[in-house]
Image (cartoon, rainbow, N blue to C red; front, side, top):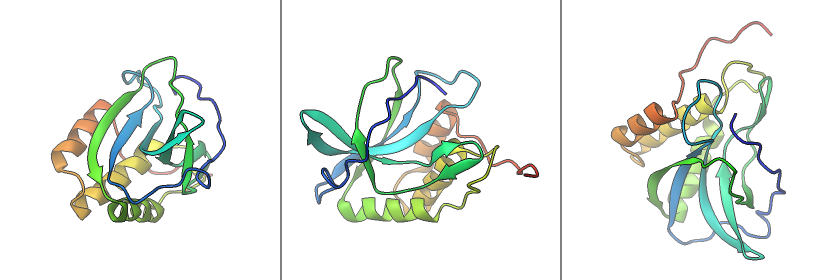
Length: 158
């Protein structure tokens, strides 16, 4: 899953989203896909806290068999030892970011899944963003190839 991330508290109440236009990115753990699970998320900057960059994070959290989605989450952005791969999605206003959050809430996923994790969840979110006209098919294809975003697989009996 790439480098181990430092667990940081949710600081959204201290550094919430604002009305400004913001650049939105996809981040994939590590500099390349190594053939095993690769953590991915969406984020934008919310500001700074004690001179540290704060990002709002859109992702499912947990481990296989125990996933959840809990927005809004903002955390201190800490560089990892291994460089991450970032993909620029575009600049979005507050209303568009709120729509992205609503699309994320609507992504259907099995919280108990041991097969379909964050890459499948993000694929579904990005496909919803294509449908909204927020990103192009071409941008999706680049992310899909580079991460890669795997396709949903049938669940095993749990």
